[in-house]
Image (cartoon, rainbow, N blue to C red):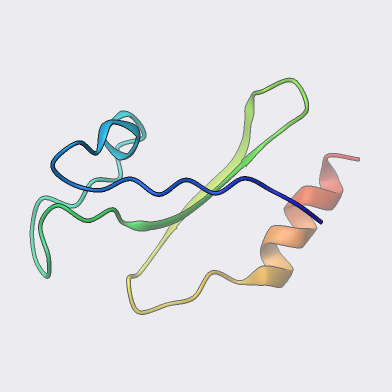
Length: 70
């Protein structure tokens, strides 16, 4: 399975700012929250979840959400 990933960082951080996940406070201002976004075939946001910085996103949960798209 191939999927695009976005890397965006301060001071530009345009994408993370638009998605509302740019961290302004501790532990490190200017980095994005750890988040996963799934976009459907029509370009609509089908799922998103913000995770604690010390938590790896649950792959099974994400795959389950992708499977729901059919």
